[in-house]
Amino acid sequence: MREEPVRQRILAEATRLFADRGFEGTSVQEIVVAAGVTKGAMYHYFDSKDDLLHEIYGRVLRMQTDRLAQIADGPGTLKQRLHRAAADVVETTTANLDDSKIFFRSMHLLAPETRKTVRAERRRYHERFRDLVAEGQRTGVFSDRVPAELVVDYFFGSVHHLGTWFHADGPLTGAQVGKHFADLLLTSLGAGDVDQ
Figure 1 (spheres, rainbow, N blue to C red):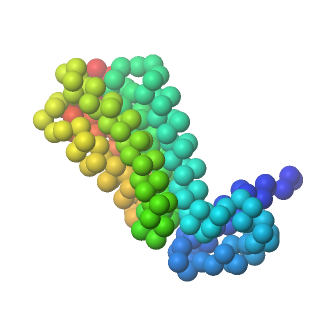
Figure 2 (figure 1 turned 135 degrees about the vertical axis):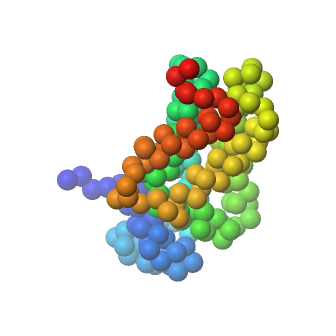
């Protein structure tokens, strides 16, 4: 078996420890011991524990951003693309639940500049998602009774709350929850069935 690259091992152990003990309750020393590396090796890849926390969430957000771009610019009607985008963000969040939970539980602990960077990255994702809703409202595909910004904030409030109740061994899979969330989003926009 090939040894996992050092950077990935550090991230994996930091994620596990932050999920178990919390960001504040985990020391750099505990991370390097768990990863089987030196502090020097950790600092080669990450400037600080802050940097680790940023990367834990950043890797999920980058993946979701890439997937959203493919869906938004891909084939299908606007309804279908928004439905796919909504289902995808739920499914990828549930598949990376520890990363998301750690981040939302600990974001306020980030240094101000890092927090500002992360908010800007999230805002870009939300704006791309909102553009799908706004386009549908402009073209009459979706109801414009509720501003697109509010629709998206409400939807993502639910997505960010997944970490408090979703369990991989629960009655619904991430994909099933994603489909339900996407259906609810389209219903709230007066869009009806995605295949219509």
